[in-house]
Image (cartoon, rainbow, N blue to C red; front, top):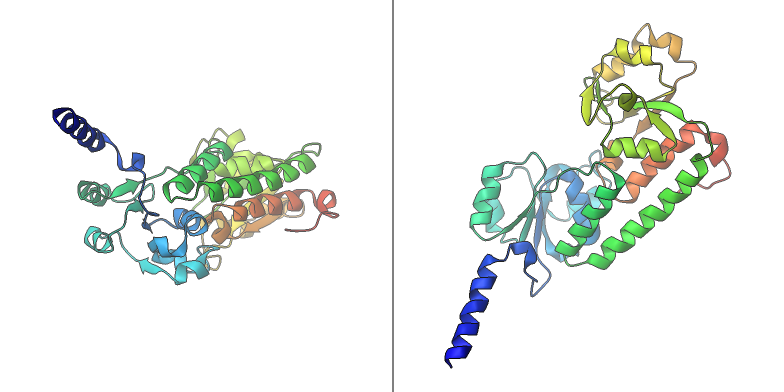
Length: 289
């Protein structure tokens, strides 16, 4: 009897030291996701009854490819700890810039809190998808999504590998761009493009003035359609006098912001759009996905 009690006590102590992510859920965990990019991943990998709430902005077509699925779920406008706790989730996904006090409060109440950082490469993205799939109880779905993405990405990379590499830059908002160690940089490379921002020494997110950009003479400028009718510094580039000298040669590409917010096949759609714009002749015989 004494030996049994000792073993039982030891088990309780061990469980007390386990992090929530190390505990195997007796049922599929219930989930709240509060960041549009993560919302899209959760909507693809978890069953609908598991998802208690997503970010309200994910329910808008301009923000996510998965807005219709999101519309069927409760949309939270703010990260209110009391509201989140009242829904009794097992796991809450927060974005990189979410309120840490709310996260700390929920952890103290025994709720598992996940705060993934934005992936900076395809490898980091594969790991994130696999991690989220495991957390929500559907690792096989995650593997199938990764395999599907990798297969199509490989086809694009094989098509562009022997072609000349045009120079491109992603340019949005108040002159914001993405340089090395970003997923956008990896997307450009997979499309057979050289990232002008990386060439200019930018790592991560950076800013570039209109004059500097035009002097670098990119072959392609990549915008998004987010708030496209709102005047911004990046959009004013199209009206800049210097741009008139570049416009005849410069390729202008407009990616859907909703796809850039939606991990999964929408990311590969963006890569293919960039590759087709750079080398239309190489993709003329390949059907669009």
